[in-house]
Each structure stands twice: as C-alpha cells, then as structure tokens.
Image (cartoon, rainbow, N blue to C red; front, side):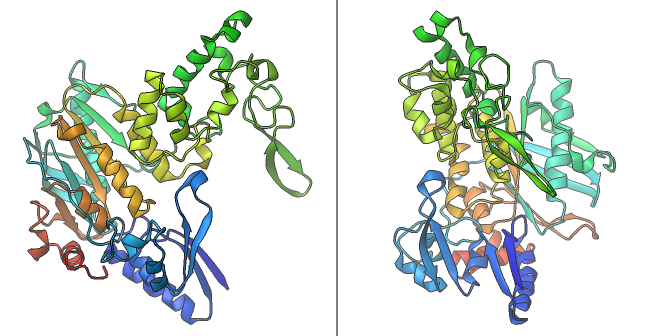
Length: 464
C-alpha cells in the first residue's frame, strides 16, 4: 500500500508530532510506502529518503535539486531547505521545526490588555494579560485553547469595544462556519486596556474567494488601478472604453463564451465533469476588441498573467498598484500571478494575501492584529517574510500590536518579542495559563514542559 500525506504536521504542536511520527513508522514497518509533503524540519529529518524541489516558488521552481538520503542534502548549496535542515552550516536557520532562528531586537511593552474571568469552551475562569506594542505568541498543544482565546474571545471582546466607539476602524467580519450553530457565548469578568485599541484586524486562512473569479489582483484592490491605467490610454479613449470594460466580471469586455472565467465546463458521459481552457478566448477571459488595447505594449490579459515580481517593475509608475505589489513581495508572494484564481491558493497564501491587503492600507491610531497560526503550511524560509512585513519600517516605532497562535518552535523563536502566553492541557481539561513572560528566560522555566524542552534543545543546536 502507498500512503500519500500532504503536510500531516500542519497545525500540530511539536508534542503532537511525535505520536504522528510513531504512526508513520508503524505504517512503514508493516511493509507500506509512505510519501509525505512536509515543511517541518523535525519531520523531514526522520525521513529515509528526501526529495528537495526548488530552487524557489512558482515559475522559479519545478526542479528536483536533490533525491537521496537526508544527509546528502548538506552537499547541495543551491537548496533553500539545506540551511534549515542543517543549522550548523553557513545559512540562517529557523522556521517550522528548524533550529537556531535569529531573533531581532526586542521591544518593550507600552501597555497591557488584560482579561479576567474568561470562560468559553475549555477556558474556565481564566486570567490572561497581553502586552501592547509588541508581537505576542500564544502557544500550547493542539486543543489547549489558543485559538479560542485569541481568535474568538480576544477578537469578540476587542471587536465589541471597537464597534462601541465612533470612528473606530475594522476589517469586515466573515461568518465563522465552524462556530455558527454550536458556538458558546463569551463570558469575561473584567477587561482593561481596550481603550488603547482603535482598530482590529483579524487575519485567518479562509479562502479569499470560492470561485475562479476571485484572485489576488481583485482582492487586494490593485486591479482597480490597473483598469484605470488601461482606460486612460489613447486606444481605450478613442473606443469609448472606461475602466469597467477591462473587468472580466461584467459584460462588455469579457469573453461571453466563458463569462470571463477563462475556462468552460466539460461534461463527460458516465465520468466526473472537468474544466478546459475556453476555446473562444484561449483562457484570456476577454474578447478580441478589449485585448486590442495595450498599456506599455501589454494587453490586460498579459498583465494578469504576470507574477507579482514582474508586475512590480512593469507597474512601478502606478503608485496605487506599486504599493500593493511591494507589500505582496514583503510577505513573500512575489511568485504568484496577478490573475491566479483563489481556488488555486493555499490557506497560507490566502492568509498572507489578507495580511498584505491590510498592511498596504493607511494606518491611523493603534491597531491590533490577530493571526491564527500564520506559519501553517509555510517553508521555514517563507516564515521570515511575514515576520518582517509586520515590523515597523526602518525600526520606527508604530502603534501595532500583533497577537498570534503558533505551533512551530522556530516561528516562536523568531516571532515573539515576549512577553508570551503558553498553555497546557487539552479540551478535556481546564485550560490553564502556564507562564507569561519574556521569551528568552523561558527555556529555564519548568512550567511549560513541551515548549521549554523544544527551545532548550533548539538553543543548543540539537535535533528538535
């Protein structure tokens, strides 16, 4: 039997990864073959055979850089994975299950957000304190209550206070399908520090759209600027084309055969249906008259086919688009195409697109960012990009609070300014806050058995 697993450790605490590895070993010992797509370096080190694909993402990837025993990758200098798998080498290290991640300059808290008597799901009369003006990591084993505390309790409490104040900013709230019917109300005895927060931004891994019509360009808003540039060309004005002509979502400029989707459904007798490239527009989404209009030698379909990195140079003279593209590059999404459908994006890519969309907006006042496991599904090298994106540019102090749940120890070493909050226990137990405090002394503390051991081992450069 052949088993194929796609990132089985995603969303798991290191303590939960060990039982998973034991199960995989049992499958192998029973005479089966196990193929695993994985970013967690601790999992990768346990493999018998390693295939490294790269060297980069998107159009810059697709090559097999190495295939062989794990130790052999240390002899492949072009591998991005190599420095994370072998932290004693020349490259930087860190990320999901990596070791030796480099932490930047630590910031001091400029205030506190305190919750007292919190009860929800497995949280029972819990007290929690979050520092303001820094990046806080909330950690613990799977099911310990991290997401409930941050994504539900903290988001609901801060959101309620935000809506109660005139002029407070917010991101549109999306319905949470997982909690619609069975969700429990939040019970909080006392809250202090909310007056410091002017805006709440919650960034999750839900899709940015459920149809191919949604894509990176439309979600971030940069496509509006692109359409205006096309409408301002002499060719468009002479034909009476406005910005709407260059939208593939409305009649006029789009291909009517595929309704602007670029592909059509193919019905197969007695077989599941599939999709094929539109025979009329060949996937371009637009009709011939629209494609005749060119901006700097490119038509609208060709621009949508550009990667973020390519478009950043092509649209450098369009401030609104350039700002969005730069932010997308900052979060490590330079390899994505502007017109890449939302249905082709991973949860990690969707979350980074949402983060980039928020970061490109003008920020006023004190913003609280909530991220639920932002490193899930990311290679260790990709973890560093979102971290840097939320740092104040040039070291300048800004009123940004960042709170996030996290499982990857490398991400915690890189992310946390401290103080942080760690949890022990699963849903069948009462969730308890084990120790808030600065990140650096934590490996010497006995209160967090899983994280402390992982950080101690990582600090010593061991295999953890």
